[in-house]
Length: 229
Image 1 (cartoon, one colour):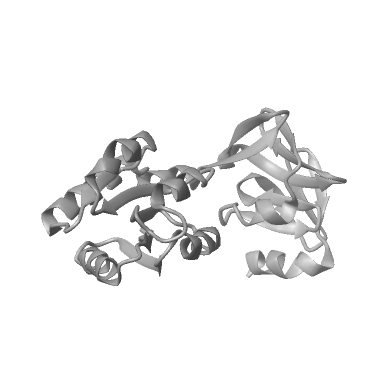
Image 2 (tube, rainbow, N blue to C red):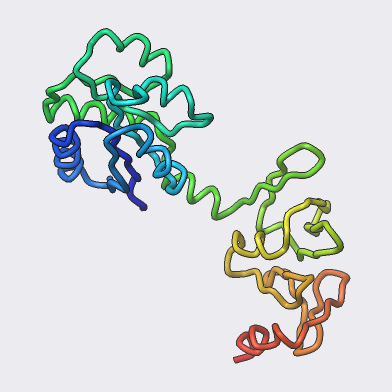
């Protein structure tokens, strides 16, 4: 399982060092970056897929709470502050926990436990996403069961997902959706991806799948040859 990615924003170097030290004693956390102000932290937040921010409040230029209000969809936040009076305001912003400096390791670990209780179960989520795909069509997000997909066709500005029971039309590109598919899907043409579990027959020129005969282009024949090998 991937580590939780952490950003520390605090103008006190000692406080940042203590936070990093505490995190080093807990499995599953990786400090992606640290900043001494909100202005320094914001580019790091944009650049990286952050799961958790440790955020001070009293900092130069922009305080932590104003910084938090400025983020449209913030990651989970644990505030570490020397000032008790901001606690209610912090919880109103849906922070995971509010820690008062100096922070004891036991209290820090409790905050981490609150974060993990609030965070999605990544193992279960990965298993779920290994079996399904969501695509947008007609202002809805449709859940696509990989096993039900026969083949995928790119036509003009749209992608057609041909399933056993229905077809879904979406604006997704074939190259982007190819990256999300499991290994039983093979690209045979710039316009076609097939689910090998539904293929009836194939050669270097065509793939017979369902009631369709789909062409194999020269640039993708190598992947077909590997199947024969």
